Image (cartoon, rainbow, N blue to C red; front, side):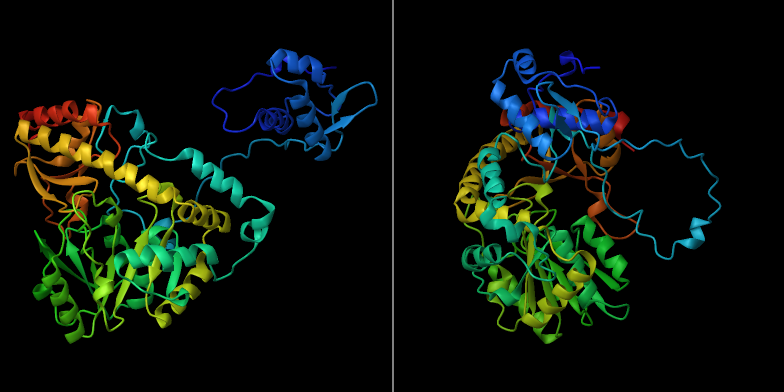
Length: 490
């Protein structure tokens, strides 16, 4: 019995060659049980004519499947599903059993119910997505990233692709960070002082786990990066929120018994305030006097399109007490999950050991692909393109906000990709967010960024990185209209 040629069709959205698409179609048919052992496939000539492609393409696909023992050839008879081809599992559905475990007692530590805000998975389907931290597909350099990924798959990079680094990292990526990325922030570091992480959040977690105990105190900005609350709560340390103003963290308000200070001086999260040089020196002096360490999250410094970014706090540190956190996830794409820690060698040694015990190291192929993307100049070209797009979107957003009389609570002096907004006191922006979703508008409520039980409910973040400039005015108009409606007020 033969498999009908009508079973096969090409998917115009398939990412790959025609040959690989044919191989995948046949392999999926076998693995799903639709194509069974001994069944005859259409001839290469017939399938090529049906799909409207070259016969050699079909022949190459069949040959590859033949080599992998999915197919077998029988003289002049043609190609058949191999007797050794994988067989889909045959089993009866497991009968549902009653869960008799009391999980409220069995769970020793709870990690759910934190501050992580809900973000719609289908954000790109909304017409006015003022969502933070997502990649605009129109700006991303798909072609060159794909070429770098293919280069990293080559025979020359076989070791980088397949080896277990254990606690080490891709030397090419480390070298680029040391020789190019860090000097742009005024930082000089040796490879022994750099560790690759799965994004900035992973870097913050490593730092918290190493530096904090139940007896130690951490000072954090209020408001601050919402995930940092959860990270520090898991560390079970004493926590001291310190209010920020238009210049960021106030050093004079940091408790004298603080052990670790977490801060975002160049682009405060979420207010976007930039800490001036005088306050940075003051912060270093305060930390020195109390013998505290500083963890500096230097996110979005690449998005400085209004003015050159300020030097990193780490570049002013002469004591080795600043631990620097950087990330490529915001500037390349968030799904990359690639960041780095920079600190004194004893600290990095411990971070390396902890990372190795949890996840070994970030995938070698991802590290090598990023190294090529960076070193071949594609990254700098991407950043220039993003800066120009953000410059225009920021201007359009500002004009629309002024037109509708909305209030900006904080904005970056050097640029960035979002604005920190304040609604009237009686507006609950969590409720506002739900109402706006029904009108095809996405915003981010601000209360998860604050500390304590009595959090302000009238702030929200408005990002312009993922929405085309031409849609911004209408989106802002819808936000303003809903703010004026009594039904979203509490």
